[in-house]
Image (cartoon, rainbow, N blue to C red; front, side):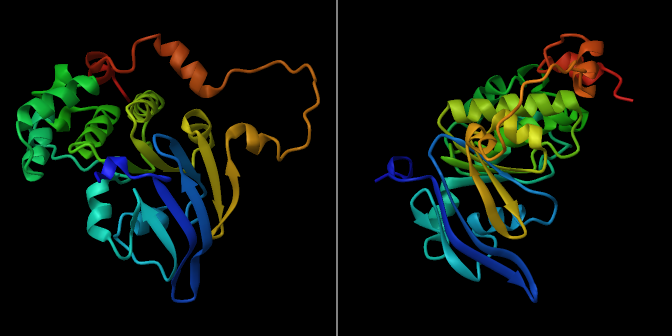
Length: 269
């Protein structure tokens, strides 16, 4: 049986507990993530989001509870879990001296895959980076660098990818670029566990949203299901004012955010 054909949820977490001394970070966390879906773990800084990701990625051991990824137990089958996942942290892990293509080829070679050049070219096309393929990654915009980072994570076709605060520190244009990339991941069948503190990001991307607060999941559902937790809305006429992000995007024009030339030459000051 291949990793891709295993039945059941892509991720299953039951009763997860983790403490650092007297600090209780996770206090019995439970959730499932369906295959091919985007699951957002929403919470403020220090809520325990990154701790959950590190446990699922076998980088940290839980004190109690169980967790499985792609049908494998993170505690007893860590090697199988690592073969099934890729982790993209809060900061892009690209080599800025190398070009975008060289970064991708390097990772493919490290994974002992056949024809690393073809793999790199395919990912460059998929993530709209072909025009910038031969440029040093140090010349990339924040959004391009993050897209390259995610592309590197997909080498070897892992069925599950963890994105830990993928748009932290990015400007509005770059954030939209990453959102488009995450949607494309799910459309290709990849399961995405996304951690974020941006409410709009979870609302825009996720099939399901879990709210983590003080070490516990206090709500878990689709956006519509979460809206049902509030009192029924009353209809009133209110003049809608544009958000600052809408004003920003309107002022700079309707350029495609994936236009690498426009992204890299625009003055970001």
